[in-house]
Picture 1 (spheres, rainbow over the protein chains, first blue to last red):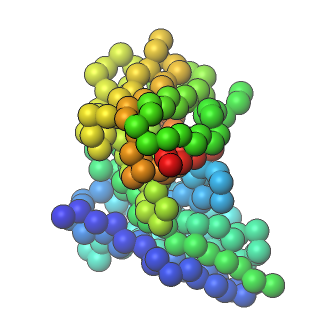
Picture 2: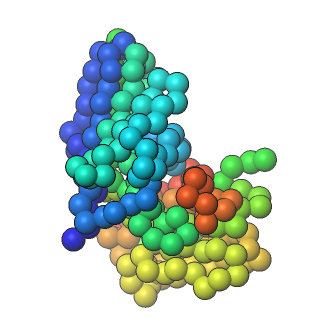
Length: 112
Length: 116
């Protein structure tokens, strides 16, 4: 069956460190992958998109990698801040019209 | 303009009752999606509307669930004879051009449904 897995355990890191979140998928061959941020009580907010032929994408303190051989994407936040604390979701396009299938998300907590 | 809005923000209902959830997408966005997010679960796709095309209903969990989109804008998700397992956050999203792989989805704040 098709599956998208993210670390279900919360990730706690110290301010200033780099946070690395993992997204693994099976039985998909997505053309691209997206990362979203979700704060409590709010809908997800788009962060980054990476195509299958792109190894790496950066936006300010964010970096995403996409390894289609390993079927894995890594999401990095450098110089993390308490304001980065949230749940981060990866999503694959799995159907026409950009229908997205989401992972369960990883909760990140950045501590002072 | 304004983002995606949803109403009500919270809904408590009794098992067996029908509920209607409303979504107002961003003006001009042609595509509209409904998702469901249960506690500890990822977002689950329910239904997708694009322009005047027939909706993609492949994610609806049962025939108690239905959705309409009137005039290519506002959408209503209806759950008939609600069950306790329907309790979840129902999220609506819209996008401008769903045929562009670079297009992102913009989400509303969700409706939190609790079925007692």
